[in-house]
Image (tube, rainbow, N blue to C red; front, side):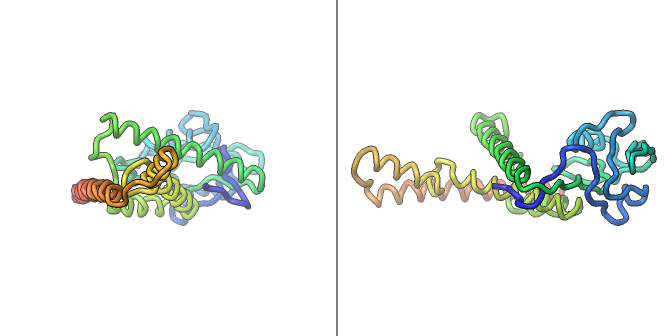
Length: 230
């Protein structure tokens, strides 16, 4: 579970860190400034900030913030970066951290639950055909996205690492042969029937599952490589 015992991220527009030479740094924004509006749109939380900036890559943008109780306005140009195949604008800042062990635990638990439900939803969409295999990312795609996230700062990289950890844990618990989830299904079946399953039959099922997983990995990796060159 993604939990910090020291601090959790604030859910407002207060800046925690500013990347050197970023759009925010060049505009004079500093740690502690609270962004309250962008191009006249009110910023209530960090998601609002990212959503508004997404369509303003390389576009002069008016940012209103509060420093030491005084409201100030500055015009800056969000830098363009590639994220998930799309060009978005970023300021080069992370949101502030609030130190509280209790809130850190609850926020970590809530974030982990949210990540988990999104992953399960994505798996469901994949099974029903609403999401194609071409939209999956393998090792090559993960490395590429990690490089993009790392450019946004160390805190963003830590959150990305937590997301990958939750993703891996949930995927491993799926009831598929060759995964831990598949092994749990066999153990449950053995408990219900009262006697063990023939090891050869179980091994054969896991072998088939492993082969299909490897096939899926090859397809996803090929898609990643094609996307990389595009």
